[in-house]
Length: 267
Image (cartoon, rainbow, N blue to C red; front, top):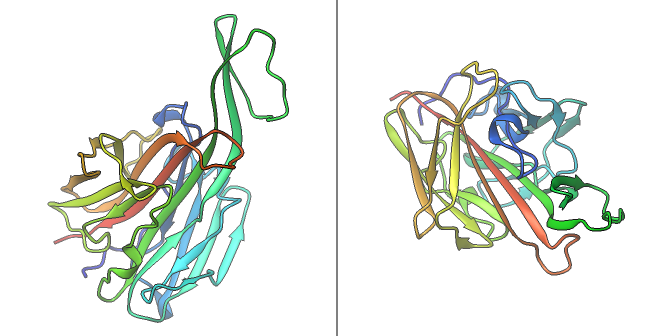
């Protein structure tokens, strides 16, 4: 696997599904390098931001974990929650691919309603809606950000799907992507292919004041899609989906957001 030079600082996007991509917070998890550095250590940044590289809120309320090449989930060696960003460190020992995950983060419960022709929202589940209000949506945002790091040769164990919630499952190995090639993936919702769903690709480190998607693709009937990447760099795939929440959830609907950060190497 060819190495992409060290990569600094994070990527970003959307917290509430009702907000636009250009102006909302995006969750991210991104390593400083997609190959372990000194003595196998991996350092990662995590957070939410509106502008790439400028995390505004730390990724809290998650459950940071690492899936080893042997298929074992372990805790990171270090997790620091700062005000504007989270820092994760882990020392790799076994050769192969590691999956780094923020864990699922369930955020505030939103109720959107219309009153006298004006749309409003409430985050307090105990708050009574005003008389005459028409409920438009009632959901809880469920966020998951992930990335992969490989020590020496890429392996497949860490790429297996959860078959739960919304997820982007790599078909092309995310640590074996080269400029001029396509990165193929599939989108699943509770283990089933999610057809005709938008997936946005963002380019990191391009200096945009407000990050705009580089391109958008739709999944096919089997939930598959691919993006062709002509340039080296760091990229973020972003998928979202509103769907009924599981039985017993705190809200009738979930607003899923999933992001996957990966790098494209030089040939």
